[in-house]
Amino acid sequence: MRIALVAPPFIPVPPRRYGGTELFIAHLAHGLHRLGHDVIVYANGESRLRCEVRSLYPRGEWPVRSDINTNLKDLNHTAWACADAAGCVDIIHLNNSPGLAFSRLLAEPIVYTIHHAKEQALSDFYACYPDVTYVTISRFQRTLETMPKMLPIHHGLDLDRYPLVERKQPYLSFLGRIAPVKAPHLAIEVARRAGIPLKIAGEVQPLYRDYWEAMVKPEVDGDFIEFVGEADHATKVELLGNSQAMLFPIQWNEPFGLVMIEAMACGTPVVALPGGSVPEVVSDGVSGWVCRDVEEMATRARDLRITAASCRQHVAENFSLDLMVRRYEAVYKVAIAERQALRRPAPRSARQAQPEVVDRPIVPVTDTLPVQ
Image (cartoon, rainbow, N blue to C red):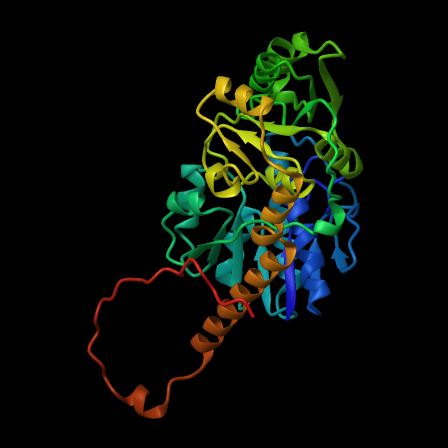
């Protein structure tokens, strides 16, 4: 297949530091390319992949400003990408919402992955495009939407890029945006209750500067609570792999949580609060613990009883790159076949007949697709 993957234009693919969506696109592009598919990734000019990359904007822009210029840049990039891909690919896979508006003008089938938490305005927008095949990144996320063609596919990792570390160092880790919903302030509380040092890595975005100044920065002493800043891939796997456990005390309904499987891939259990996808990503007692509150998180952090090998095996069996890519490959094939069936003219006898019109409910895509 010839596949167009459209990324937002703001962060390189793969990301140098922050960028969950961009990391997913990089993994998917690599996996599809490895299977022999012809992949074109539409991203900014700082992107570096083994497959072809096409760019309208030469450089990234992060953090983005929440203004009309940012929205127009995203719209312009995506319109250009869709126009460029039209007529020369078998399928277009969008990862930002503006492209959906062009789906009415395109002959190619469209797949769209929902990367964000529930937003009603976006859900209403999605409902305007029922012919698009929507992919949610967790089963939980799927329960929040109502589009007729929709199925969940978990993210997957190339385990070769995540070394297994069996001998841990005496500290806990937190990796994520420095934001109230990610709750690094609760990770600090867990560490203090457990009596185990904590290393925090993440981006302090301008929107949450006040939160950082009030809730996190005063607790950072460079000894028991250490802030290491933003982490590139090498820093990330070193931080996660060497830690006894990664803390994930989220305060929202997490759509997926890619960092959870990154930690487990390195052999590090995840100690988390429930929310959104967490119970379907972390296997209790196998790859981590899903806890009721901060006190239980501290108790589990002191007494993990989970091996590095079981964490790694959980990811290999449920969140491998090959499994994710095969599932997307199956989705693409179904979407292409459906579009070709719509183009195929009906037999002459069928065109002459006047069948009775019967209203039938739209049947959603099943949770499972055959993996070939």
